Length: 459
Ligand code: AMP
Image (cartoon, rainbow, N blue to C red; front, side):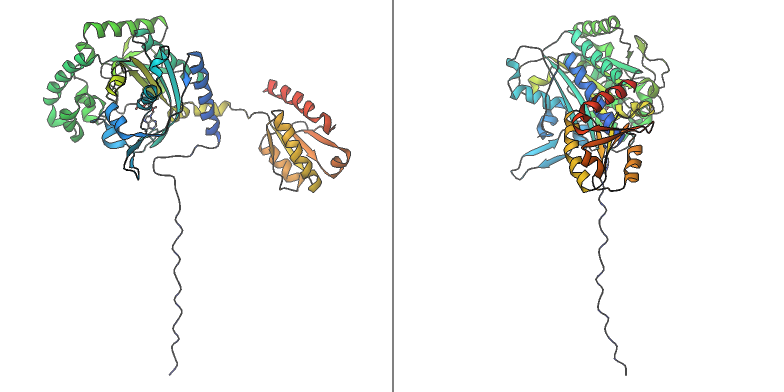
């Protein structure tokens, strides 16, 4: 009988794990890199003109800082915070927003001892474990501006003006400002009571979240995006009917200053914002295109009635006079806002890419090892002169390198071969006309600086 040989067992290889960015988080690369950078430059310029100092903060803070400021009963704290426990047992959270961190930094670094007001701005990622969808990410970037030590209504108008002008300077020219006042703690107490009475009479029709909000945090009922709840909101009492005289006067002054500054706005009596620390003025910015508005803004107009799907705002903020004291600091009035960088880039992307012209650049072509060595030296000289360069020193073929120069839309190719190394010169080829000339090494940088200046002017 033939012996049956046992086949060696072939070890099954585990399929390689395909790594992906965490859900709701995205890479920023390609043309978007320049769009992000451009917005950061616009923010830096506007912050400078309005007297804001830049502050860099940790991405992680004490979890309780957000619980106590943003508030329990808000979606951010109840559902969306990324929290972690350190080995030492500290409870920390990835920042879901910037304001609380900036207030913490103001107190910790004794900024109350500086001449007031103090204006701080920051830029960076924030994290919210929300349902990812278009324009809603789990890691997103914000440009954040906080203005401490000014209780005058002009400060509110100034903050709104800065937000609008920054967006405009970036190229979002159809900004709609939605503004409201939610009053002081006293006005808000009365309003909350009226809101509860109204919503209790509708409680059977509310979504499960809103049923819960009715007993935990009634103001949050107005943030609900559920279609049925949006309809119910239409008949709800309005915040402005419950403002005390001081808060009402403050709000009227803010609106007068906006009128004077020719900043258009819509009054939205149901705008309360999704965080608990606000008082008095609150505002959001949307694009007219998204809001279904065909004119940019109308002064003092009523906000459009809730449509099927409310457009996402690209910025929002307001006054928060109680927050610093609530967190254990000195009584300090404050107003601020955050702009959503990802959403602003999305709004401006099509228009910017349509009009985008690459920055004039030069392609360095080398053939042979001797030329390669010269190339390394030349790259440094050209970099020091501020010339934007592309090259691939591992390539040999002239044709392939010139093709790359075409792809990069380079205005000149600088070519060094064996002969050029011997003669100590470089061939400068105009990529548009194909005209070539030889320039000695010693004169190359100056000659290229002059040529690039001309090309930049012609751009
Ligand atoms: P908020 O802190 O919620 O007032 O948000 C301020 C701005 O940040 C919003 O107007 C958005 O532009 C942006 N933002 C907030 N949450 C997200 C998110 N999940 N994804 C992208 N942008 C966001």
